[in-house]
Amino acid sequence: MTETLASRTARSPVVPPVLGGLGLFTVLLGAALPLIDFFIVNVALPTMGQDLHASESVLELVIAGYGVSYAVLLVLGGRLGDLFGRRRLFLGGMAAFGLASLACGLAPSAWTLVAARVAQGAASAAMLPQVLATIQSATAGPRRAKAMSLYGATAGLSMVAGQILGGVLVAADVAGTGWRSVFLVNVPVVIVGLILAARAVPETRSQHPEPVDGPGTVLLAVALLALLAPLTEGRAAGWPLWTWLSLALFPLAVAAFYFVERREDRHGRTPLVPPSLFALKSLRRGLVMMVPFSIGFSGFMFVIAVALQEGAGLGPVRAGLALAPMALVFFAVSLCGPRLIARFGTRVVTAGGLIQGVGVALMALAAWRSWPDLSIWELAPGAAVAGAGQALQLPVLFRIVLSEVPPARAGVGSGVMVTTQQSALALGVATLGSLFLSLVPGHGMQYALVTTLLVQLTIVALTTGLSLRLPRTVV
Image (cartoon, rainbow, N blue to C red):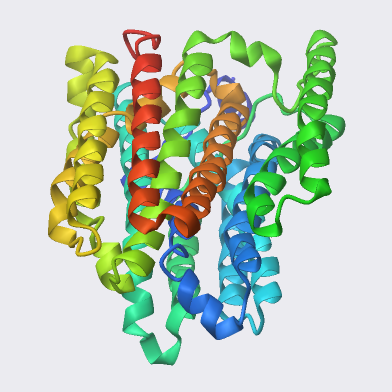
């Protein structure tokens, strides 16, 4: 009897989705956009303030509004990708990011810009978790290792390149747009990204999707807002009562979130952040190291942008180009990461911390010796060495965190990791940035810069010590 098409189809194996070269390029483009936009405004803030007649506290909201909404919604974005399809969420998030960028570029007032930045952060939260989840679900073996290394290289390079690009665009004043071009440049990039994603990114989703954890989502949002909002706005606002009440609420919200998530996990449901996920040693220890690393990274980027423009008198282009050696060396060294990991294991991360420490010390020495005539050439050696050290840490750290996460939980795992990173980036601007700005009036720009760099050197020492607890090998 002739076999029916239906019976042959039923017995044929399901072909797993495969992420090709063009698809990988497209999702990495989607990963670069949110990170570039976190840092691209640093060198544009003085021009924004003059044009929009914005106070310092409102300008801080331009950064904080984006960072907080981004961090608060990231885990939810990962869960929605698992539920409705990661390609669908990636396309929707990228389209929304382009529209929000257009709104930022056309903003008629400072508060309109803040609102558009909040929307831009929310769009980023829908788009970015799908990148790592797609890589985890549509690659395997050496291809996954290479893709994760490229993701790490893209992430680190984007954070430095964003600041460089911001300086170039502000100075170029394209068609008289000034600072607005740092947002408008996203629009054509998004259009290209949407066309490529529709053609080259495969659809993946969890085989057993769970409904959204409403109580967990609300409690996580409350906890992150209670921490990030007062730390980012407290100094500029004079630390009013609400900032202290908010900080007091933070541990209570975290405790409530933990108990709700543990109850969901015990009842067989999938909470927003499953506590059982933290039983994975690689994920737990990788996240612990990622927090201080990201705090130091973002704090440094913010402080160096302000110090070089307002203290050393460099324009936005020269202030951005001061970090060009860091970006170039980071990209070159990060490409060697997979081979180094295969040979030396995660002790590469420890070596990276030591190298980064030397770079930060060289920059602090240059600022102490040459201020206020600090040139980009005097900063270049330290920036290059620090970039090499960072390249040996960040891409490997991403691989370690997600190495044991099962594909079914790829969206949740990537959401947890990126939320941790993004929250720490926002904390870096809030803590190291506030330390720097609080020291300037009483001690001067040189003292504030050198002191902040020495604090970052302490953070680098902490991350180097934590790297010794990482698993020796990476899956």
